[in-house]
Amino acid sequence: MALCSGKGLRLNQEFKQCLENRKIIPFEQGSKLVKKEISIAQSDLSDAKAGYDNQRYKWSTIQAYYAMFHAARALIFFRGYREKSHYCLGVALRALFVDEDKLDTQAVRDFVNAMNLREAADYEADFSEAGAKAVIAAAERFIEKAIDILKL
Image (cartoon, rainbow, N blue to C red; front, side, top):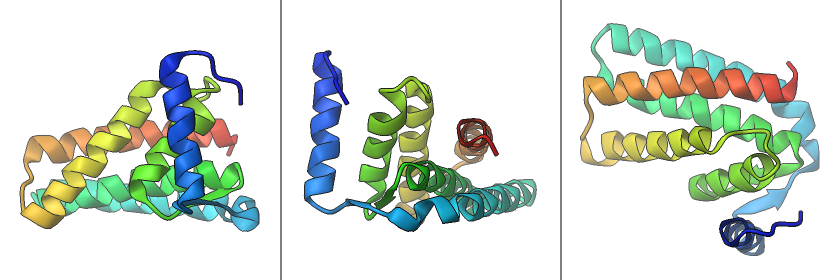
């Protein structure tokens, strides 16, 4: 992948580092699991919405993030990779989809924001109704875009 901007070069280096550190690995069987990952993403999103409706904002935040996580996995599985790091999953999204104009940078920013909100909810018991609502909305957009990219 040829990258000419300074930012693109940095992202390409991050992706290479994730590969070298085996946080992203080749995964030949990935294409067989794409539909399963999208199905899990949709199920997690449904659970997140139900939790939100029941004012369970911590769990709806966590489940909405995992909806995005599984859609992101589907995308990199489609490209023949598998993640071993949530951070490197975001790096892979940028390198494999944003740099090729398949996914916009806002989608990856939303993924990273959702990851941060999930970690705060999970590890620090720091969550809110507004945060849960934002992650659910981002997950809906992200899954829709992933399905479009994957042509499912």
